[in-house]
Structure formats: C-alpha cells, structure tokens
Amino acid sequence: MRQIIFTLGLVGLVNFVVSAQQPNSLQVRSSNNSEIMIRLDHRYLNQQGVNILVYDIVPGRHRLKIFRASPLGFSKKALVYDQYFTAIPGRVTDVLVDVVTRSAEINFMEPDSRSIGHTPSDPLDRSKHQK
Image (cartoon, rainbow, N blue to C red; front, side):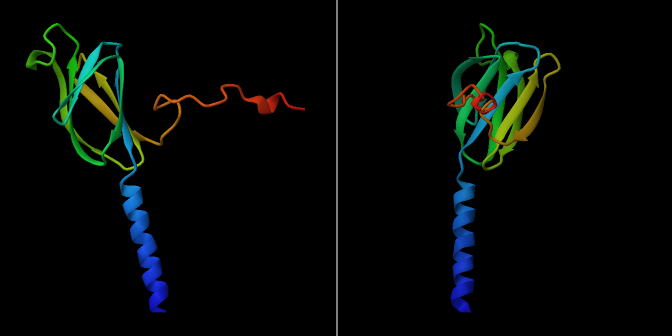
C-alpha cells in the first residue's frame, strides 16, 4: 500500500514539474495597425511592427511595456501601456493594445499553429480529395 501511494505521489510530482516548465509565447498586437515596440521585464526587444511574437516566455509574472514606434524610440512620451501579467504554463498570452486609448486586453489561448506563427506541414487538406 505504501509503495502505491509513494508511486502515485512521485508521478504527480513529476507531472507537476514538467507541466510547470512548458515554454510559453507572447503575442502583442495593435488594434488600429499602429507600429509598436515592446519591453519585457528588463529586455528591450529589437522587434517593431503591428504584430510581435516572443517565444519561450518563462511561466510566472512579467512586466510588459508597449511603446508606439516613433523616432524617439523607447521613451516616456512614446509609452502606451505598462502593466504586469502572469504567463500561464502551456498557454499563449495574447495582448491586444489600443494605442489611442492606451488600454490593452489580455487573453490566454491554447497553442495553435495560427496563433504562434507555425504553419502545418501539409497546407492542403488532402483527405477530401482521396477516393
């Protein structure tokens, strides 16, 4: 009986540790097609655009700063959004920011080939064409 309980506890612990270390991704999008730049925790990312993808985010609490793309670069005048969010293990954190109202909507989605930028290996669904 003790061995069964110990085995179940060990399997549960290993499952918890493995699920807690799944890589996450962050997707930041502009609602009105304005060019944006982001800073995650203390890293200024060299990406600029309407849709920015960041892979391998560690699960936990992060600080996200979103800037409007401007000649000023990363400055207080260009700051649009500055908040903390919590990355959930195995989920894509989707942030939709409105540059005009300086607000953002954060959603957590299941990983999907369309949401994280991967394309399927077979773009055509050939099952319909087989006889």
